Length: 103
Image (cartoon, rainbow, N blue to C red):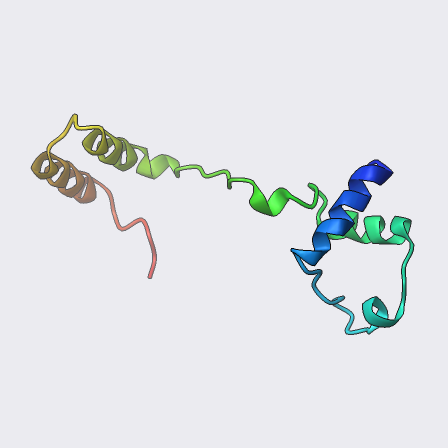
């Protein structure tokens, strides 16, 4: 649970980042003044990793079967491969493996 001062700072930011209406369709946020504990409990339920998790960079991974293709592209981007060599490598790798992505 957040310290009270941090929670109040987050609530002050609502002027700049408006709160979405409740999912249950109620008008509670308009006609009710929930206490800070209730607001923080709802935020914790909606954002279990914290309210600023939406601003964190996503964690990406490359599927094991695409590691060689990714390495070839990175080598090209860093100038270790020419574009022609990259295309040759990708074409060769494409022939080695069956279609990986279903349509």
